[in-house]
Length: 267
Image (cartoon, rainbow, N blue to C red):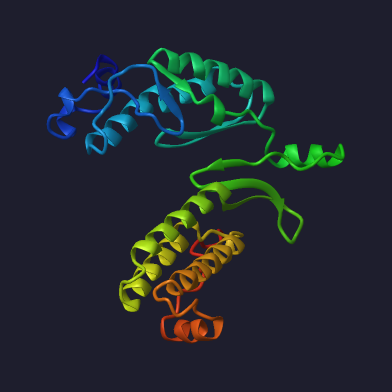
């Protein structure tokens, strides 16, 4: 392993806990959403040791450092949410947010990393931001994307502030495009096999994106899949496209699962 990785793993982790041959693996953070590598050495693509080393590395480079930073330098509350190399920082005061961004860039530069400028933003977000912008006659705060969801400021039926989530538009478009391509490959497969595969796709989508207030996006996803399946089935022969009357009868025999919200309300 590189010196940076050994340094990152030494405070809490034993090298014996890592997979075999991990100490000889070249290491730096691979090109991904959050970072761009400044060095030429990479972990093997798809290697089992890559996510382990990346998490250990970022735990030292980011998590522990931010914990110390907010205790020593922040004037208000600072919250951090990180998954792999995707991170969201929430600061109570704007000055803390600006200073944290500057210091974070310097911290990453020490390890040969940099923030992705196209995906790094400092925005006004939260309960007080929404109230102040409404009082000033401005639009609601900007949204941000994290882990496939678009997070936005909204209100409940009781007029209380709440952060809501919906499926990220770009992620939804990419998923539907991939499904269309796979449908074409499975075009001449038996209907029962196609139906089984589509049920797995829809149920998997509902499991991940089935959060509160995201039902509309789930419904849009299912309707697009239903329409695309009809188009593909109509191309199986030269007799013409499948009309909706026959297709509805087929859906009775091979029903597709309805959208389900899997997230439970917190008491």
